[in-house]
Structures are given as structure tokens and as C-alpha cells.
Image 1 (cartoon, rainbow, N blue to C red):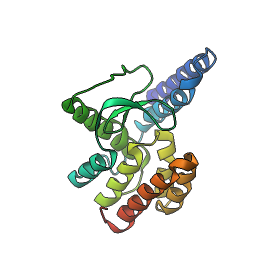
Image 2: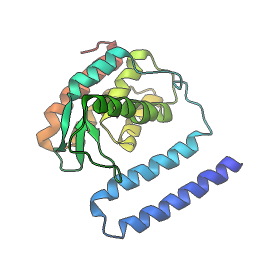
Image 3: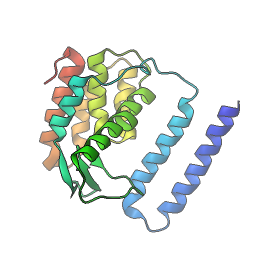
Length: 201
């Protein structure tokens, strides 16, 4: 019961904070803030359940593949959609995080390890409630790696319902601007191949 009260209190506080920030002239960060707030609520609720994939970890093969796909840039650059700055292996600076213009290779590796563990893997473990094979877990980590948690949640919901990822993967291509859809389509194709057939492409 105490956990339920805690979740309710967290939800109310976050909702009030998001309302205040969204009405105080921070238009560019509203979407990220609301997304982060909802994820925090989900994480608080997650203390009541245990995911069957809690003990899983991303394979070395997928870690190497992610690095290859993302490539490493040691100088910060603007995201193609104009929504934030990125550095290293696709590390997106979050609201309130210090934005470095240049980093070392060692720092890029640290950002990557943190993004895998505390973003991609974390969201798979938070939102997926069914058993997964290693290749399926890896495919979902790849999807979550450069997606917002609430967008990834749509993939998890399909997997939990027994529908796999094909339908939502094809649908997700339309979530980005038209000029970026070919690249996203190629990535989703590879992730569907991995999820369905265990092929690391």
C-alpha cells in the first residue's frame, strides 16, 4: 500500500512540475520533459512487478553492431530534426545535461555504455512483460537505443500482446520526417530480421 501511495505522490508532483515548466516559456523542451515525466511514473509503478527479462543483457554482437550503425563522433552535432545535440555513439544530451562540444574516445565509450544500460536495456526491462530469446532482446535494445521511452513502449505493447514487432516497426517509419524515412526503414528491416529469425545484419 505504501508503494501505491508513493506512486500517486510521484505522479502528482511530476504532473504539477511539467505543467509549470510547459507554461513558463520552455517550448523546445516540453516534449522531452513530458516524456521523462511519464517514464518516471512508469518506473515508480514498475516496482510492483518483475519483468521476466530482468536478468538479460545485450550481447556483445549487438553492442558491436550498434556502435557500427551509430558510428562515433567526438564533436557535438545538431540532430537532423533539430531537436537536440548529439555526440559519441548517438548520445543525445538531455535537458539539464552539460553539453560538451568535444569529448575523448574514452568518454564516448562511457556514454555508450550508460545509454545501453540506463536507457535502452532499462526500457526493455521496464516495458516488456513476456519471455524473450537473446536475439529478440537484442532487437528491442536496438530499437530502444535511439527512440524515446514512450515511443518504444508501443513496441513493447505489441510484443506483450503476442503480435511481434513487424506491424509497429513498419508503422514507426512514419514517425519521422519523410527525408529520414529510408534510413529508419533500413534499420527497422534489420531489427525485424533479427527479432524474427535471429540474423544479425
